Length: 148
Image (cartoon, rainbow, N blue to C red; front, side, top):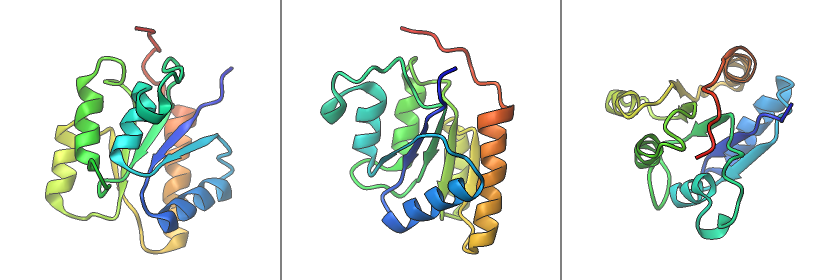
């Protein structure tokens, strides 16, 4: 059985470290690929740019997407993922500090599977990441992988 990869799209090194620590504290030991902006995220997922030639048949089981990203923001990344048949059904959890109602509404309108606001309290964050990991990596039955 292939390991379920997590793609973390996060530009803040502090939030990256916090997320990785929370995953580890919850014994979520899956490989985590970290990309730092929207362009790099799309390049990774579609095998372009610096990821040209990457085997795109091996996609992450779960994408954790920050909204406030440089170059291309998270909402545009989500829009492009949903517009492409290769990534249209891929589970995307928006993981952001934004509590703006419009960001939440736009995320769901563009096809986010879940919207989690990063709690300020680390203990709450660890708990939220644990629940997220249990659901998305263990319980959830993702769409079948179709090579196109």
